Image (cartoon, rainbow, N blue to C red; front, side, top):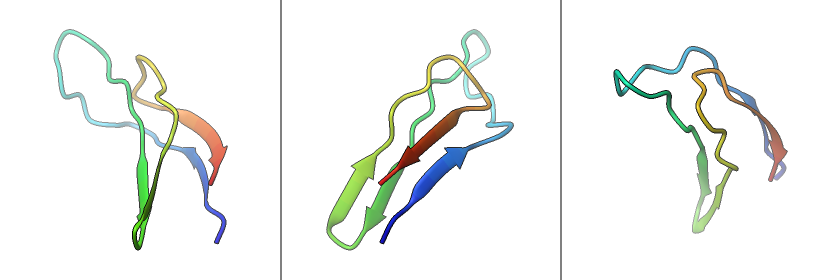
Amino acid sequence: ISITLVEAKHLPKMDLHTKCDPFVIVKLGDTSKKSKVIKKTYNPKWDQSF
């Protein structure tokens, strides 16, 4: 199985003073993979494959 993580849009604001540093954890059975962290954005673009 190949998974391509492309982007997220309009993530919710969790803190009033700073932007978020989003990442994704993909789990399939006993296997999990973590994406790279995209700093200070509510619209991250990963373009990352697992």
